[in-house]
Length: 272
Ligand SMILES: [Zn+2]
Ligand SMILES: [Zn+2]
Image (tube, rainbow, N blue to C red; front, side, top):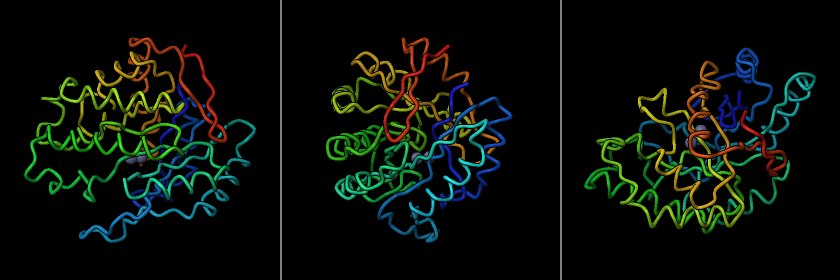
C-alpha cells in the first residue's frame, strides 16, 4: 500500500480530524508511513458565506505539534510533515520566500484553489464562461504558477477544476489544452518537480482520479517520473481511499516508481 501523501487534519480550516485518528486509520489499512499536508493558502480572500475559512497556518506551531506525534510513533510508523500550499499568481514570490525559510518541512504540494480571486467550488467562477473557457483559464494560471513558484515538490490535483464544471469531465478533451499541458509539464520536469495522483475525486462523485488519464499519459510521455499518491482525506475513514485504482493507473501507464519525500528530497520506490 502506498504511503498516503495528501491528508488533512484540524490544522486545516476546512477539517476537524484528529492526527491520532488519521494515524490509526492508516495503521489499520496497513500503511507504514503517511505525510500530513495541511492547508496554507496565503492571502486567501474571505468568503462571503464563510469568513472563518482563512486557510492560514502557523507553520512553527504545526511543525512542533506534528514532531511530537512523529516521535511518539517512531518505533512502528513513519510520519512525514508536509503542507499543501494554495498558489495564486499574486503569491508566487512570497511562497518562494516561505519555502526557502521552512526547510524543516518534508514535502510541499502546490495547489490551485483560486483562479482570478474566485473559488471554482462556487458557481460564480463559471458565470459567463463555457466549461472549456473556465478550464482553460484554470490551466493557464497553473502554467504561470509553475513558471514563477519553485518551492513546491509536486503540483496537486492538476485538474481539480473538472470537479466543478457544468458537465464535469464529460466533454473534456486533452487536445483542447495540449499546448498548455506540454508547457506545464516541460517546466515541471525541467525543474525536477512532480505531480500527484489524487484519489479525492473518487469519493466526491467523479469516476476517475486526478489527473484525468489523458493528462497522466502526457506527463509520462514527456518524461515525467516524479509522482506521489494521495487521498486528500479530510476524514480519517478516507485515508488510502482508491489506492488500488491509483496503482493500476500507474502500472498501466508505464510508471515503475512512486516518490516519497524527506526534507523536500525525493526517494523513488518501486511499485510492486
Ligand atoms: Zn487542494
Ligand atoms: Zn488537500
